[in-house]
Image 1: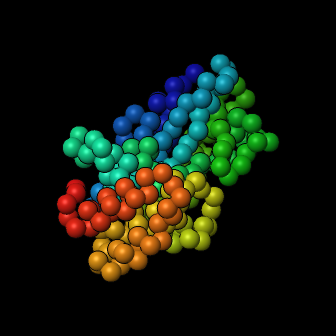
Image 2: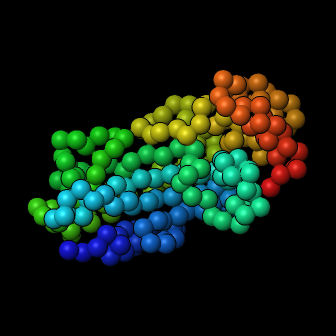
Image 3: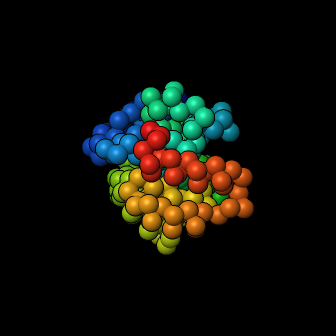
Length: 213
């Protein structure tokens, strides 16, 4: 059976390249000039020896979210490309039922793709290429715009998981351009019933003042 890496190289890589993404193994990346990244990741799931089962997930990782998440090891983290661990939003790319591992379980937040026994790899390949080209890659590109991402967080147009509470997300998306007065207004909306909220606000003030990378 065709390996997942070979399958993605055949069916995903051309579509991703066309959209400006770069590839490293099962991870595809779109970088914005401000350091924000959108990621597309294929993750194998060892559920059936007769099939290749996997998830497809998209992530948007603002540079500020990466910097905050790795503030304690920033000197080394700043030299690395952001990964999914600091995603501000993430979502599952849902397969059509004919290429889903369990068609009855297909849902907006969690669904497994598959090919192998009973599912033709070419059929799955054409399906993933269509979903990526028509839906997922345009959404990733759109949400690399911080204003568009914030608008989506405020009024979601599709199902996704948000990695931070709204006030924290708003701060992360606007801290780099906020005036001192705007920064304090942002700080007033940060939810303080979360761990390290004071540290987060202090970090944001230091970043806005240019004291952090």
